[in-house]
Length: 234
Image (cartoon, rainbow, N blue to C red; front, side, top):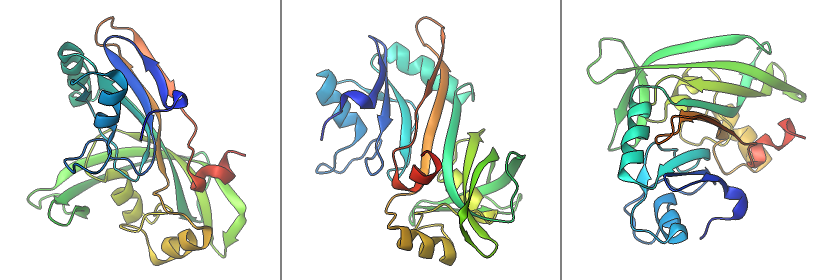
């Protein structure tokens, strides 16, 4: 597998910004499985590519990688200090929701590494980490309503970066993502099967940060390619 021209949004001697396709891992230790790091090393003809932040394997979207150790340190510091803006589109199942209202979700999530899942826990439970995001309902598809159920497009701003955070928090709030077999409800799974969806309907659509060498503010935007988003971007 290799990068296509449309997968690269920006490149210079310090960084490269890519559109990761759904189904490709950001980085993996499995030798037979391609990941973004190995793909980039092959594309750049270099042994050094540094991961700054990650997207789950089933999720598509924007990622920035560092090509030098100095760039890696600068970008990682921005990510650690929450100075990197990350915005997502998510296609979800909604109930009686209004468009354009902005909401905030604040929960405590606990990761189960063995099962590779996270769940919402009480504030005082050991291992729980505060997790915050805000979301706005951008569009609802009235033609696809089933009773009080509807398919909706959310735009999400991620404040913290926890394991499976968006998927877990939205499911807990009654808005499971289409295509999410791990955290989806019975209804969302049924609708996903009927639509033939195989990937989680989540895309990192906007990424903002300062260039680690020049300090210039950079902002990148993409439109999701996933099948679940097609009806929202016609």
